[in-house]
Image (cartoon, rainbow, N blue to C red; front, side):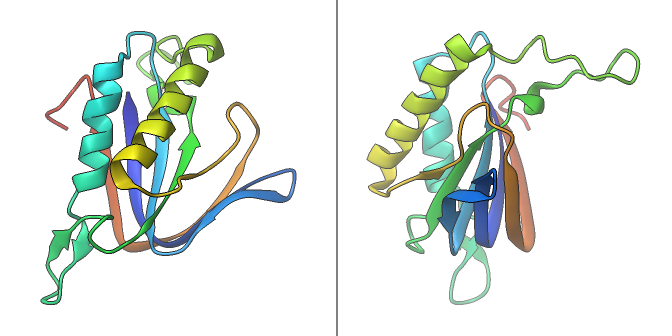
Length: 151
């Protein structure tokens, strides 16, 4: 599982002009799933996201988590996070999980994130053509990969 996390002052996702998810201060999480992802990958990632200290404390130091600042979370599925660009100019997405695998992972991930943070998680529509708007605060953008924990 691979995610791109952006600290935002606001973010929204829409499908065909209709907003499906919207947040104020918090995290926009772009989430991509691969064939080999397991519940352990999801648990590890949920823990990282919930406890990631990228919000400023009273001294202006990034020392607080999304839970500490009572922030919101918007999750948008994005299979292109698993793009391979080694050969040619057209990315390959063979590592990305197909919908029959990715959808249950996506739903489980959101459920686990809601349980861990005790927050309602806003979301996009899996597999839809979505428009994502955001104001990146900082800018702070973090990439986390459950298969490459050194990132």
